[in-house]
Image (cartoon, helix red, strand yellow):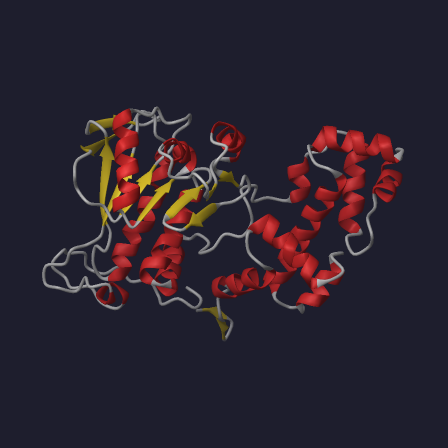
Length: 355
């Protein structure tokens, strides 16, 4: 049922229960365990979806045999903080408590920063093992100077604004989450789950993270960038001619696809085609073709039935090195890594049943 992972069995959650396995190896197995404290910062107007990360830590506690993560909701003044949905949560006020990990959540808009919030986050960056942001929480880290010179991401709709306002940040627009040393940033709200799973994997191991993902019925490692849907649909061509050219490209990925050839499929001159294509899709024909090829190659790699050289040839990359560079641009990882991830996720089948 759970593939390579052990069957998920919730453990008793009592603070007096010694940790075992990976948790014990981190020095948390005493009769009075000191669990790593995780501070989750919320501000007025926060999105409830951001609490998806907390569900990951909740199930990690269940799987680890004890409350490995001691989660605290934080805000500058404490007390009740109201979400964009109208639901309020109780928070603790900022103080001198030491947190192993500090996460800044985002909202429907940008988080309203204050000197107190910036000071707290900046102090956490020097005291905590890691700091992280969810969605537009990246703007708080950027304002605190924590992202200067680092790679980071945020919600795709705010990525260019983040780059414009904070040019010292190396913004990568189409990433689910990014880890740059002790600083972690994630994209739109559901990406907080991906980030949290990666944190759990880092702290407690891949097997436990896999068990958590199975219990929550989500992918352990989600492939792709923020779009997470067909590159063909993402292009959203408005005219039949450009759409026809895209469909033609998808059917002939294994062949050379020059602008002239695509223009012919669209019944336009190369100059007219290039201009119309960029106006409708926001991409050059060459970039769109690469995206289609990467998507097709990813599917073939995850299916795991073909050698890498065959995948490269059948999707038009010509050689594996060119395909590797395209994967790194699109997904931040090479084709081999995506194949390994798919194997971890793929359930074993024994006697006609998944195990």
